[in-house]
Length: 268
Image 1 (tube, rainbow, N blue to C red):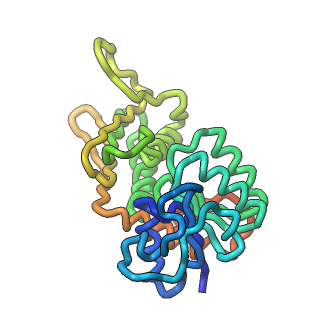
Image 2 (image 1 turned 180 degrees about the vertical axis):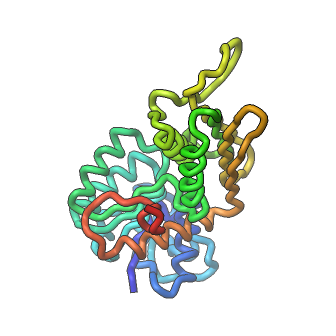
């Protein structure tokens, strides 16, 4: 039985991950923690996660006190906290699954360096459907080439702090690579006023924030006389939680390295 440690137990994703773990016969909750000073610290993880029953596992303050209690750490928190957790996990040689978005390039580079000493799955979206979408986008972009404009529209709930979403950025990177470009050079994230004609190379990523939208991504390939749209809509956070638990079960026993959901799903 794999023993999981869940970061951010009082958060939306942390709670759903605990729920998914409790429904899975191959993995169990070993520990849960929150940031220091959290109102959830000291409470039972089952009650905090909305299970309506106690699990006998008290939500702790910080990772340091529970790092040795489990086989794998699952983290969907905040970019600065996640980086610190990765440092602790690397020092303990503890496998880790990171679903946190909003990580900077420098933070990702540090996690990549840390992963030389421990196994880590890092993915901006743990959904099986989204990771299949990446593959479909790659295939479509390679086939359609420079004759079709590429636009990405993403929508999330009003509480989401980063924009564009990590998923939208990854879609952009996948599409750009498939047509021999770099998103950092051709990405366009806002249009307003008299902007002139669209360039052939640019890849647009537009953001919507409203209500309680869980997550929606549309990839539009616009040609002359036709357009193709690939769409993924998440109606529940459970799709991300299930993917994270699947990744946690996969990464235990793997060698050091930085992996993603394409590795977990065997899509590479």
